Length: 327
Image 1 (spheres, one colour):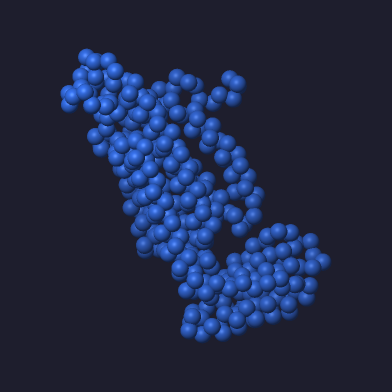
Image 2: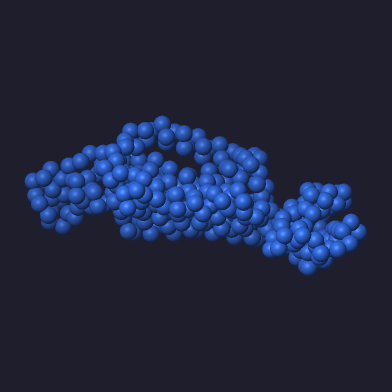
């Protein structure tokens, strides 16, 4: 077992001494992320802007000729198609955003699908059209609003849960850490212009769950240590708590990365955005648990007697903190 122990039990890293500069950097990154989202925007996929997906199979061929398909469809003037292999090597999906004016002229979408399938049949005689699926602009805008609402409600519900389980300061700290993680993820997609679709919403919800799990582990240890070391300064106690959970954090992250990194580099293109989001989320979620959720407890007034009951008098908590009374 010692051979796989990557983090010693007695680590004593002073994470909290860098809390102010790291908090400033995080604030800048959050502001930059939202600036990118607001001014550059997200590259919304077919799920959120409407469009069509055409599923094809190239009978008798070893693999689908994706580059040639892209050239064929680009000549039609509908913009750049999103073509991805799925299933067998000779199967591919084509996703196209709806042309402008399609809401007022429904036939435009059908005409686009007919022209694309006709061009494919002309250039690739062995192609088989397995299906044409459409998402209207109205439905896609509803999906976008519902997706954002799900993210917001999940963050609020999580904060309420932590508030009830711990103290209100912990709920605020967890909410800010989740806001940090979601903001940086959205900023990453605005910067890279990777397609933002329902898969990415699912990835962000996964990031929220992972970050919450890491934050609760740290918070639980902080609460235990607040009861155990009542004379220890809070910054030192937070450092102790983070160090005590560091081994678990490192092993959990490595286990996830072992599964995600091969999928990121060798997985199907249709999962690249989702895998990239979760991989980024592992790092920002761990960072926020240490440098967002923990330092905020200091600034929100958590003290060594925060979890000491005061049922025997208003000054008992203070006397316990000074070591005058034993519980």
